[in-house]
Image (spheres, rainbow, N blue to C red):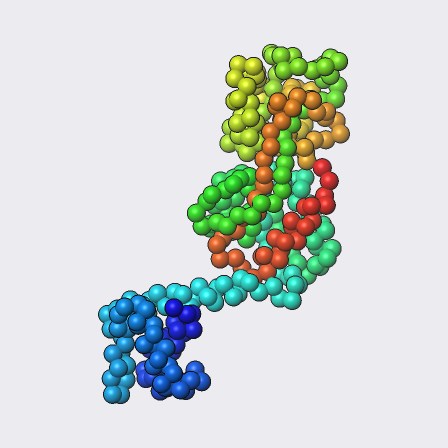
Length: 293
């Protein structure tokens, strides 16, 4: 089956006769009839009753008509989605992402892109993973950035950026008085954690679960925002885990590779992306490759 045959079929149904359809398509009537015969042979059923004055669809033809119209619409969406308007970006796009990305990664990326495309408008809304997914699926955001793989029906994902989550504490924390820090030195130390639904916390717990009884953190604070965790750690209230992107100058990393956790960020969008979104994603990935941690 060829897509042009679907178009031919739709034109015949619309025109009412093979001759009228052939004229509109720029074909001869015999050539159009031959294409329909090939289509019916492939499908193994008759789609059209050929009358002396007009054609009408059979029961199978009505079923095929419904599919053909959907395929035509899908083809139109595909062509629209593939347009890149001469490699120019303009208009307004909304992005939903978590706290680390929104605060420490996206600002640098957006600054670079807007300098290149001043006619572009980008808005960012911060939300956790569930909120970002809902915003995408509900049409409230054009693009989402999630840790993954996402594996969410209705969304298309593309790997974006790698991230490492590391244990940190205030540079003046007593733990750094030791010449060499061991995992056992963390016993009874207070820890500042993200809330249980946080992507950072899930990545950390997935990593530390393998250590079993060797690592049992005494959690004294569970906070929702990256800023809250950073401030608590800078104040010296405990040891915590942060993305390397969000480690401030007042914090110092604990050199304990067994506690380092890796994660990947993915760019996500609905299956039928609006025009220009693929180019925006390319620009975001390109900008991300040059920003430093």
